[in-house]
Each structure stands twice: as C-alpha cells, then as structure tokens.
Image (cartoon, rainbow, N blue to C red; front, side, top):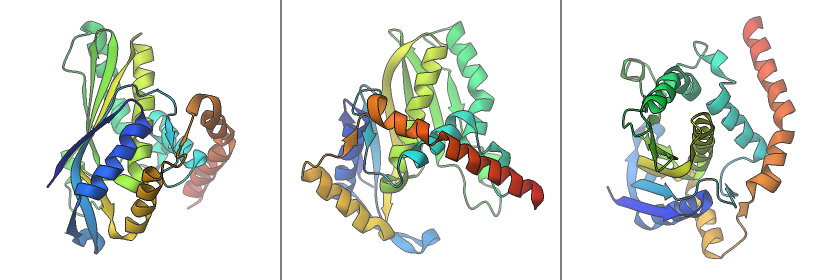
Length: 251
C-alpha cells in the first residue's frame, strides 16, 4: 500500500493535498464488507498551524450545522446517551474517561511522552457482531517549547466524507486541552493507515480534485464567518438532541 505524506500551513491546505495524493497514488482494491471497490493508500497529514485561517474547507459532506454537531459530539458528548441503545461507544466517552490522566500527566511533567489516549477498546471492538469498531485508535499530546502538539492515529478514514470533520474536531479538542494547560497551540499530525474513498464516492472525489486543480475558492474563514454560522445552528442541534432523548425514553 502506498505511503503518502502531505503538509500544509493550514488544515485546508494539508487536507486538499491529501485528496490530490489519494487521487494520484491511491490503489483500487476490493472492499467486500461494503460490497464495492475503494481507492486507498496510507496517509499522514501534517498541519503546521492548525488554527490558521482560512480554517474551513468547502470539500466535505454537509455544512455548518453538521460540522457544529460533530464538534459537540466529540468535545461535549451530546450523543453519549445513545451508548447501549444501538451505539457501543462514542469518541467523546472514550476520550473523556482518559482525559484526566492526560491533564495530570502534562501538569506533572510538561515534557512527558506518556500523555496518551487509547480510543480503541479491543475487548469491545473485537467482540462478535460488532459492525462498527472505532476508526480512531490513538491520540498523543506532547508539549514542546510550551506548545501542545497532537498526534492522531486512525485505522480507517473516509477521505471525502469524514476526514475533514474528524480533523477539525480533533483540532478543536487540541485547542481546549492547550487552554487547560496554559500552553500555546502546536502542530497537528493526522495518520490514517487506510485513507480511502469508496466506489460510490469516486465521482465526488473527482469533483473535489477538479475544484482544487482549477484554483476555485474552496475555503472559508472560521473566526470571522463560519463560526457564526455554526453558532446559529446550536438551537436546532439542541432541539434534535432533545427529540432523540425523548424518543429513546418513549420506546
């Protein structure tokens, strides 16, 4: 499997380079679990300044409401109540249970290499009948020169549909942890052992590639534009979550 490495000053720059690399170097292989083919390679994305503007790519499924909901799912656990009711886990629940150790360890020793969160739970993720084992496997937080760096490992990452939202949310988590530790923001590194596009999305990936190569305007500023749209979607998201909770109680 081809090993690709891309880097960018900003998140969209690195993400767009990763799509170009997947398109160029990805190999077509069978994906029997999903009854289709896939284009796949291994990918490492390095983001030098994770909060640099423009921070938002237009090249992902959904919009500001979906991105805000996913941010809340990862950082605040708004859907943790679904665990045991069709869901075996959430990223938030597994991360949050280990976050006290990360904060305590980096407060104890800011040069520590031990501030690791293992999101994969092999007992749960390998049990018979589990059709959705965690894609996110591992997160490591390191402080160097008073900057908090985050390194993430994914076993599997859907490039055109999920990767940008994953990275955005994890960077938001990195920013939150940096604030709690009174550290500056460092680099963000995102490794996907299988960085792929399913056959059903080949045309979607192709449209993304055309937009990138044509030099179209495919980014938004987060702070002075997109964040406001995301904030405006919060009441609707709260309403949806409330409805899900009520339906769960009534069934």
